Length: 146
Image (cartoon, rainbow, N blue to C red; front, side, top):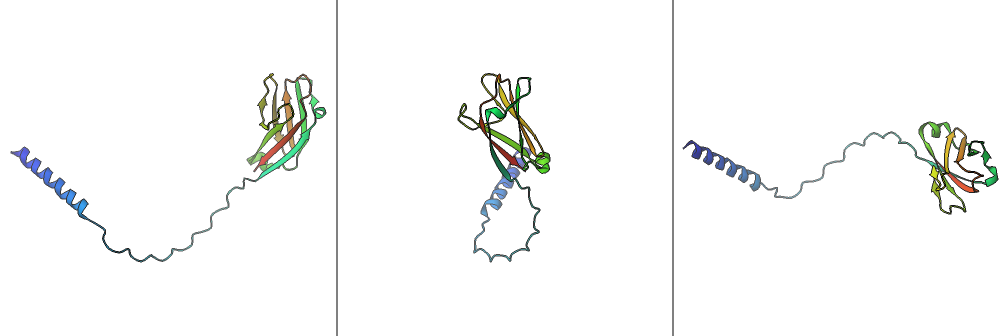
């Protein structure tokens, strides 16, 4: 008997809940638009991701042999500022007739040699590792991001 009463009570509660949630509608016209709110405060200026592209040519004869199987070329670049060194980055890309597509550095050449670079304020140093002779002449793009 108690099971039947509990079952009837549960069925009644479910039926009433279904009626309440399904019978309510929002009939009628939409009300008028409210007035505009106050203007918000001006936000802080975001970081500027300014890119400076510097292109230059490195002839094969300009590479300096360090005597350790490494060839070095140093390029002065006043666009490499303290701001770029501390909070930005420098990306380097090369192109030569030996590799007639632009490629990102560091790059490893199939013969075991490779290119890499480092930079500091005002200077970009290019390195060519494991070359028996000076690397081929190349066009270089340095992309400086703040």
